[in-house]
Image (cartoon, rainbow, N blue to C red):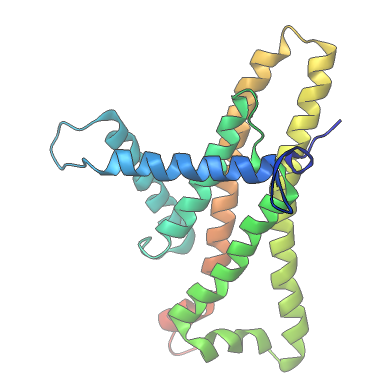
Length: 230
């Protein structure tokens, strides 16, 4: 039984195997890019707008509000990154109901890549906000002996982010296969519904955690700004 889409080899590109994870990841990216182009090419500010523009405004407004509540900062700089994470994971998980599609989020290699993107984004946003030495200085606080522990903490929470999403999606697939074997006539519909809800929840949690990690890298500066006498 092959549970990971990494095990499904669809073809070869020279010496490189093209598995279901790679193919489905590019399919999701093509859907997001194509859908974004089609929705945003005719935006207007009138009262009468298309259903897709209405959906887009609701989505952007919701993401902005979540980022604002999580970071207590204006969402503008963070929306492209956090919104892309949410849309990619949500679209991948929702397409799991399509026969033949293997969600790339059920592959550890894909979730690790997403977590590494968050790992890279944290210092980039931190340096942009606090400067290079201001950001790196937090790794040696309260003393220089905390440097290895702070680095280990940064890496461990990235690993936890990848394993958490992979574990939730993989466990859902395993439970679904077991239940389908027990009651094949009833559970398919119920599992499809639960899969949609679970996929959206996992996308929301991953995006919120990414924003929490980014916001935590800027917390010290904000505290000093709000309490300059401390």
